[in-house]
Length: 304
Image 1: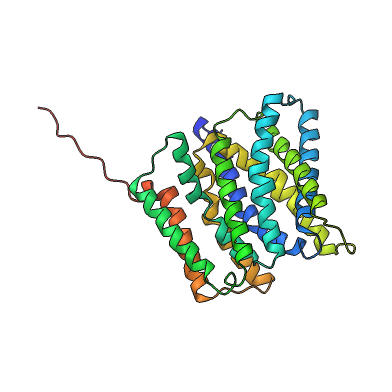
Image 2: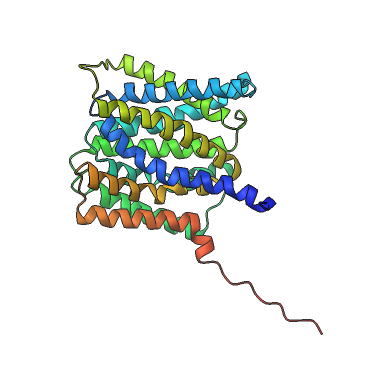
């Protein structure tokens, strides 16, 4: 029999593991997918199908329909996280930003999260400010590396995506969203509709039938990168601090870089490897610093 504490810990560990590994691999899947699909169209199909499947499944399981207020809240978070956050990353990878570099840039989300948390009166410690400053150094190094120096638009898109995702993460923990996985389903539905409209308005269209690998990448993003991972992320946002929920950001870049280098022929220069180490170190500092550098408790003298 599992203890009561373990029953609470296991879902948290499972959700974090899902985000650490699965979301790290989605950057490579996006890279494969945008070789066959227009970026906004692929992102729209991804979230629309995932949202519909998860929404219908939850209704059949007896979950309540979201109220109007919850739909508005879920729609707001869906637009910030998925339509803008993920959509801009997909566009950037379509513009030849390597998947590993995209993941390293997105690793700055916890740093943005700390900054946006101040809007709600959460003060950052000196350790957290040190992490933010360190992360900025990593961003500057990354943007002067070989992969982004000739692609300022791609770099700007991913920075905007990271800021939007971070703001949505902080806001999502403070507004009334649908209960449980219904929050993720509602967010994906709204984001899918918004991205599909954006795709049509931007004039995207298929010139030819996507390849088999393109369909496989889209399927992976729907099932694992959306239905599974986003449900896990929404669970974490409601049960842990935003900085912990976004701690996947120091594992995702490593997974994404290894997949990009191993299977997509990507390469990082010395400056970009250094930027990866600095950004990951900064994220570790702001998420785990208070545990790694905790001061030992003072021992009170015994009263005789």
